[in-house]
Image 1 (cartoon, rainbow, N blue to C red):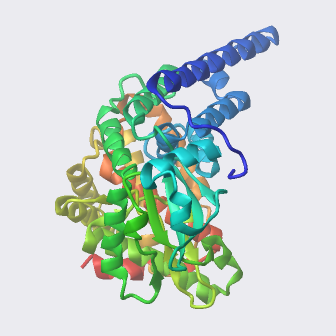
Image 2 (cartoon, rainbow, N blue to C red):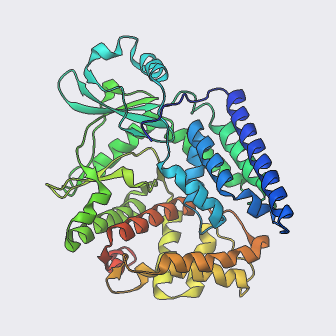
Image 3 (cartoon, one colour):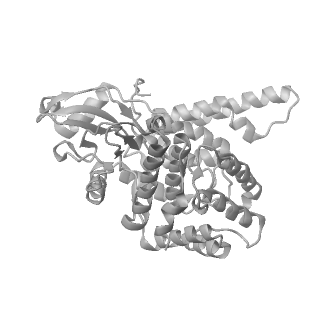
Length: 436
């Protein structure tokens, strides 16, 4: 949506007003739809009135206009459907992954002048004011440095860092009053973690440190290609990096089967390295964070703002969960899941059994010692169908452990990419060396 420009609303009052108008618009739409259905002799449920196409469009457009934490939180929630979000709401929020407005030239000039001075253009050989990418926290521009290097500039939207706490609280309130989340569910710990993660993502100096850490870890691995930070073009709200050419990772679908399988296997192995060796994971599953060089076959890694460090105790417990699941050891699964922080409910209860079955289904590609055909599997639809059963046990719903939510978000994104690329990979053999 980089062709649409709209100023980023700033200040708590203006952003709260956006949420208030969103809530009133949704309520008005529910009332009108309810009157229409009652007049037709139907007795609609409030949930059905809320999740209308008109309200879905209203919610996603408003969050896309606001950008910042409001949009980012919607994106994060949309990836965790198997844990606790209603499928309908997850589908609505999923559209936010591809929605973003750019800021007008006046706001762009304000941010860059604040970072580099009013004459910032004179410090560059060439600068393209029209961004080639826009996301929830910032937009990206092409440029050429004074010494002739092709580079990019990631520019943060004004005001998004200051609005993180209020945006998260306002959106969480909107989800609560909508009735889409069970009233007893305490998502406070998750919201606190999300706020902390978003503050870190909005700190481009921290992102530069993460990128440098990945360069140190992977810089000698010729299978990958990473940009390099340009310190003279970087600050807490602007991040300058060398430009790395390539095509969208989805273009790998035009390669032969062996190459598709190789490329995806690289990304899955990278996740294992991140998890169990570095304990530093780039947790954003957006396909735009990966690109591909058709000439060299290298996988290009971009955008490290959503990187997250994990404690050894967590990665150890998660390794045990994977080992138990692959081995079909239910007792080991329960023990590891509880160490991670899952609350499974009473042993043997339907909710308890459903959660374990969902875990086994999600990790099915890891458990089968054979090439798994991601392009020809009913697993996604089966997960949706089995996940519907969770709705029958709302009294047991709990927000998932935050660390697990981030890992499953990344794993889910990789499985989605595998499906898109129609890969056939023996994932079991890739992971077993890490489970010894």
